[in-house]
Image 1 (tube, rainbow, N blue to C red):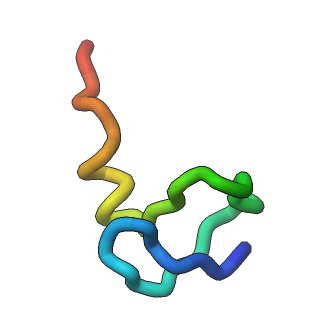
Image 2 (cartoon, rainbow, N blue to C red):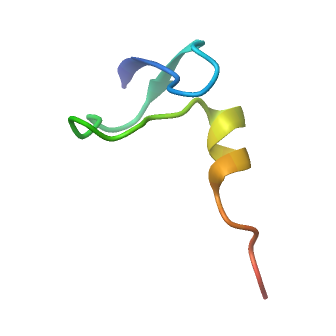
Length: 40
């Protein structure tokens, strides 16, 4: 797990990957807001 600061809300969180330099990284709550809705 890698500690990150959410690019959206600024909250500290952990992600199971190493973030790519220059790309935004989000906590679980903000990631859900940025992901397109799932279609079945």
